[in-house]
Image (tube, rainbow, N blue to C red; front, side, top):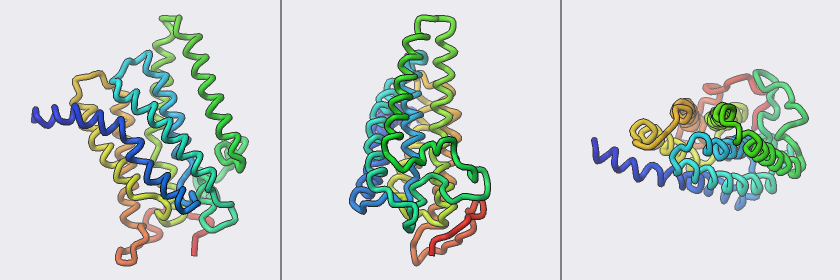
Amino acid sequence: MRWLTAFAGYAAPLFLVLSPVFSYSDQALSMYRTKSSAGFSLDIPLIMLVASMLRIFYYPGARFDSALLIQSFLMVAVQLIVLKIALDHRPPPTSKGGDAATPFAGAHDGIFERPRPYGFWQWRSPKPYWQFLLYLFIILTVGELVLAPFRSLYPAYSSLIGYIGLSIEATLPLPQIFANARSRSCKGFRLSVLASWLLGDAMKMFWFFTSPTEIPWAFKLCGLFQAGCDSFLGIQYLITRPDPGFPVFPTALTLYPPSYHYN
């Protein structure tokens, strides 16, 4: 068991650092080649960008393993590229599959039936997306500079943004789960992304609970929740994947009655 723990101590941090490239390069190339981001939820780059930025600003107060910090910087870079490609090749809402690129569009039953305030992250123009990310970075930078000198207040602030960021990251699979359930298909969602998520979950869980370096419990708890969601997404993919030789049960994972379906 010691050799496995030692191996994981080297392999898991390396895999986690490179996981943004492994997870999303194939998805980005697929959208670029097909000139379409239909089926890919724009909430995925939103979640990962916000979570990674919050994790970066969590580091000065928590001083967790440096591999997680490096991964956060690399994730921001990768997700900015993914977002740019997805926005450039987003189909119009009236086209087949166009609504799939708009998070939770067309859902009139269930938790997401109401429009988001100010159409948040559902804008048709690309400019508000970049403005939101810039404003978030400025707010976090100002908060760090203003609160860091206050030794009694800063630890609570640092823990707060850390738990918020990790909780947001833990919801990463949910937009894709709901998008798949709404369209009754996993079309547009790359198997390579799912495989990298599941492999990453396995390595993270082993490393988080065996690593001799400092891994805050916030990482462990949120990682467990995300691993459960990723596993559900894997089952969903197996049931609804577009394979003629594989059984498809279109209503097995419908989380709420859809207002439309694709022919």
